[in-house]
Length: 108
Image (cartoon, rainbow, N blue to C red; front, side, top):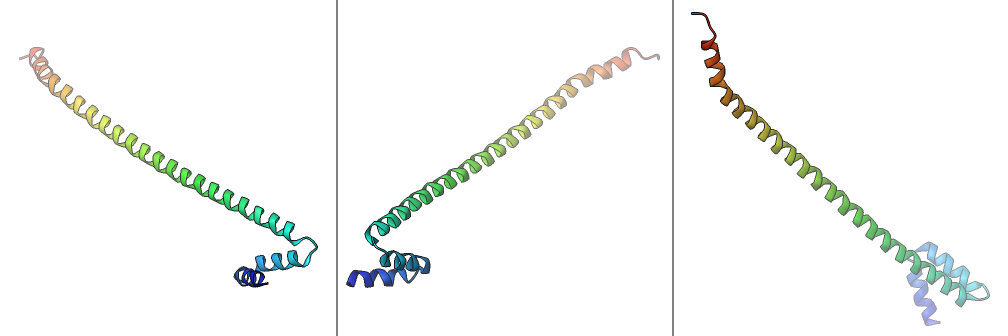
């Protein structure tokens, strides 16, 4: 009887649990019903942990995706800077030739 009182006090914190346990205790075979209720609660708890793990993995995947996008953006920026520097150096190499060509073919 003392155990029932302890369970009742514990269940009082959750009204749904209190109602379910009260109905199960009144019925014919409460041990089988309570065992089924306990197994169901354990399965739900296991599933919730599994879902929490999946949510954590999704968050990690999002972080990896964000980092990959940042790396790709940095790589494209570096490529653009290198291309601009190459174009500038190419123009600097061609500049004397273009100046020389103006004087070479001009009519004095």
